[in-house]
Image (tube, rainbow, N blue to C red; front, side, top):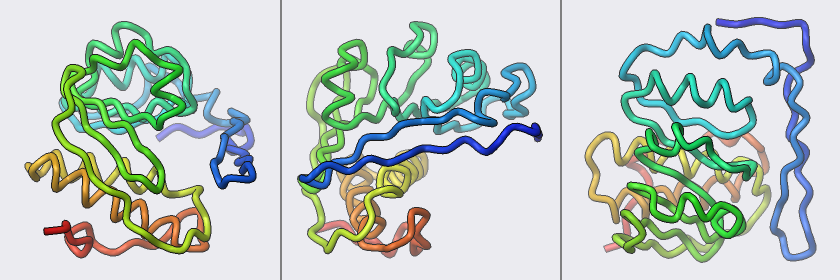
Length: 193
C-alpha cells in the first residue's frame, strides 16, 4: 500500500443537456503513485483506468496476467500497454478518439442506454441491448459495467451473456442515486432469453 500527503484524486463530472457526461480529472494523490511499488501479484487480473500516469499503467500491464483497460479519460495508450491488453473498454466518444484500439484482441464499446458491443480483432462477436431504467446518477455506471464484464469473462461466461449482464449492472448503477451504488451479486442480474 502506498500513502501520500497529497489530496485525494478527484474527477469532476460535467453533464450536458442530453445527459452525456464528461470527466475532468484533478490527479491529486493519483499523481503520487510509485509505479515501482504497485504490489500487484504477478499474473493477477488487473482492471485499470487512465486516471494515473503512463508509468503506473505500464507497470500494472507488465505485472498483469489478464489486463483490462478502461481507456478513460481518453488518451493514447502506450504501444507496450496496448500489446498486453486482453480487453479494452471504451465509450463511443473514446472509440472515435482512439483508433489504435479498434483492432484490440477484445474491444468493448459501450453505447450508453443503447447497450454495448464486443469486438475481437475488429470483428463484432457480441452485442447487448441496454436495459431500460430511470436514470438518477450516471457517475458509477461505467465502473460497474467494466467490473461486471471483466468478472463475467474471467469466470468463463459466454461473451454475449457477460456483455448482457454487464449492461444490466450498468443500468442498475444509473438507477441508484449514489455515485458508488451498492449493487447485488453479479448472478442476480439476469441475462435476457
